[in-house]
Image (cartoon, rainbow over all chains, first blue to last red; front, top):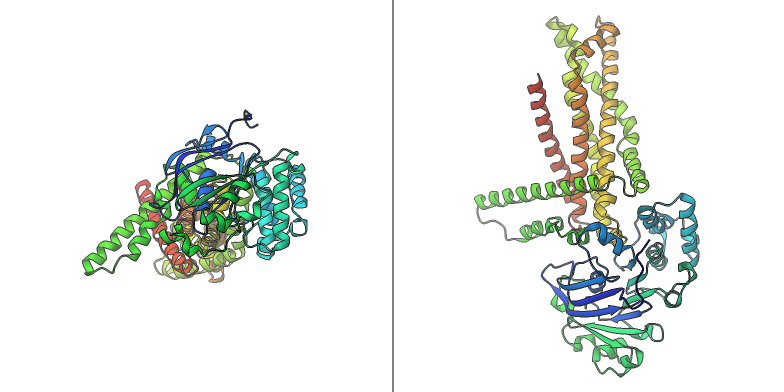
Length: 277
Length: 293
């Protein structure tokens, strides 16, 4: 049973947060981040490669503590006690590009793992629930395969299904379209849009989404709010018309309007933190 | 691991092993004394890291005894099969060889000094107290402990640890606890089979060497030399060996991001440190035996 939220209570709120990075305890990828994600939002956060999007998402998801500032999840400050933190964590799903399927489990068992671990339902209930997600993501033919023989694009779908199986209220995705070909990209865009509107898998409840991307233009007409992470600064851009009006060169580049060389856009985070790859 | 370490806040960056990398990247020592000093510091830091990792594992084991028991019991069962059942044929062979070695060596000496009535009793200090647990630990370390380092190092390199944390699953609970439990139970069980097999094969070898000893006398000598403490200490020692090997090998697999080239070096380190730790624990048990005697 998850506590009910008032409709205006933000699901995620970052107050003057300084975002660190896992690779270097001294480095900062963004500071003064103020970000409010409300129920029904669909955020696309753009940033160049190495800008710190993954670290921002990890911090937002409560997986990496803020270096400074406050992180609130579901109307509560992130707790330092493990049990309370876990309760908050289970209400949000995180899909990380660098967090793949577990290689010793089949696709089915990978998707079933959060259910079995956190809820421990009877075997037939697990079977039913996981089968629904396998079907919705087109993974039924891969269900009994281990990740070693599953193509990467299908593995990404399995990671998405695994994050959704606990039916989260907020889903954070790190560059979900990276490395995908046209048909798979189309599937992801359509599926995430359906999730945002209300997918039957989640009882037609609209899912709040926040994704990071290196191509804001792909999310035109799908994401409702846009933001930029650039030069250690998090900037809320607004809706798509406001993105189009933005004169910032990085925004123009990410929105697909220009083909500027990233090298001319100033020092990237990658340059500042060469240990990040 | 880094996420869990960071989130718990109470767990320092010792799990990230950054100090070891910094020391490794430091310029070579300019004198033998400095080289010795660096090795000493590395040793102390390794002991600190292993102790911290062992205590974290113990903490997780005690605070989450029934969490996700279906998943964890299944993993313990798998580990028990790997560190126990699947090694049984090899241990039956080792038991036969051990019985032959011990009886073959002692029969000639005991016959010369007319002390053949101690043949059964010899098996207790040699096989039950020392060789049985130590040989089992050594074989399991070689067969399963090394695999832990490779598996967990690969899982870490592939980002599977981060995947677990993203799912709200404690990697220590999911990856380390089942290995510790499974290996402790596995080494205990295999030691029992090894000791029983060595005792039986010992008598067979004695019989084949025409030693005038009936099975009844042999087992009477054996049981006469055994004490209640032997059973308790055998269980404790074997479980301690299993837990130590699992903790050390998991530590070396998980505590630092391994590149493919690092895996062999980490495996060698894990084997050497497991061996040293087991010998130290064995020495403690010898003291207990001596005090009890």
